[in-house]
Image 1 (cartoon, rainbow, N blue to C red):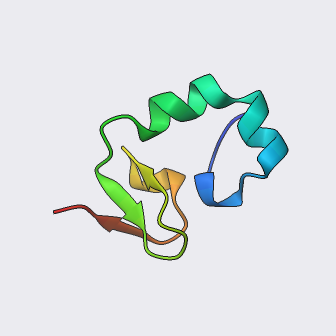
Image 2: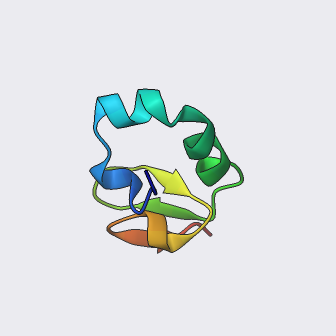
Length: 52
């Protein structure tokens, strides 16, 4: 499974792909203004906003 957006992941997906998710959220540069998830690239979030 390719992770395209963290915002759309279900609990089962999170449990299966924990190692990939950890790489995505390490050193975050963006936050989703809808669900408050973070990522190092804005493409992983549905409503990204750069962390200042």
